Length: 263
Image (tube, rainbow, N blue to C red; front, side, top):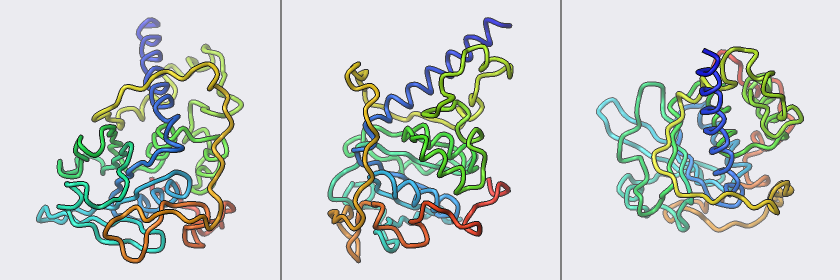
């Protein structure tokens, strides 16, 4: 029994470490983030786009199976034709990776999985429940402690609920026996929602690269090229000074907090 528990913990740790390792490059690369066009997932997408170079696209599947897509253009959502999406004709610079979010038990249509010719690295989170969604998204982007703290406050959750492994925090280096006290791997339950569709081979970082300082946030008002080819008005890759005022402040007003009941 103890051996099985140990093996399960090791498997969980390997998966978590793999997520963190692949996340190291995402601070500089463009990620396509595809979310259901619902209030909570759109808000999380906007919060991600305010911190990382992102092509944020919302999708909706009608009862008859038809699809509609909209891209975030910095000030409003703009239409993206399905044919343009499939062909990769909706952006000027293609994404380096893609993260797809789908509703529980409702797989996204195959057409929404980016073709290999314009995006090789594709992963999927198969839930819109906010706690596990934030947990796995944070691992995917390798959130700093500052980001974990901000998202916990933003969505009205405890930081150890969305970051149970304690990644990038002072209590990350807990001893192994402390992790095993609960009787199951820390955060392992959320891995049921994680799917790796395609992954590029990522080399291990050199020792010299360890402990590098966090990437600086983009300057407010920094001009960025329009990422969409058919976006009107001109779109931007989101930066700290580009989001609408109600989404930009780090100090979150009480009424902006999303209650736990929505997860």
